[in-house]
Image (cartoon, rainbow, N blue to C red):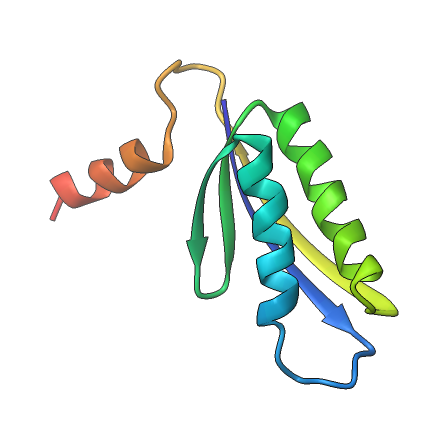
Length: 99
């Protein structure tokens, strides 16, 4: 299972706000059924890497469709295969247990 953090930023728009683009991306994530967590600086996705990458591609395209002329996408992937229980919650819990 993979945990992927993605941040998609529209460039070349008339407005400095990006929340409408983020909302459009989040609609795609929710429709996909992929487990996710919205954060102030990006979105974290959890699941099969192929499924996640397919959704990220749809998210990026949606930003172009919404009017951006350029899109910057940052992707950070944690793909762990030595454990079956590799989750967002598990990663946070592991750190909190050490505090």
